[in-house]
Length: 99
Image (tube, rainbow, N blue to C red; front, side, top):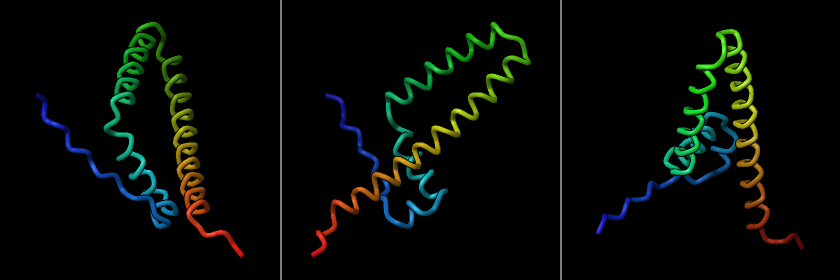
């Protein structure tokens, strides 16, 4: 019987982390780093990238890399926005209603 993997304890989001860009990025990286499905997707992206690289010239490849860089930045900004929204929503739900 295989041994159970010890679950890594993720950082608790608090106002300090939410308001600090670098701390939020590190917390999100810790959350995403060990996810099997994300690792699988990463390998899939690498295979597709290698296939495209073999088919295009250097100029086209550089343009594709620049496009990918902008897409990754947009996704990173979206992930930060979702984390902040989820944190703020959790705070609102946890508060007692105003009288």
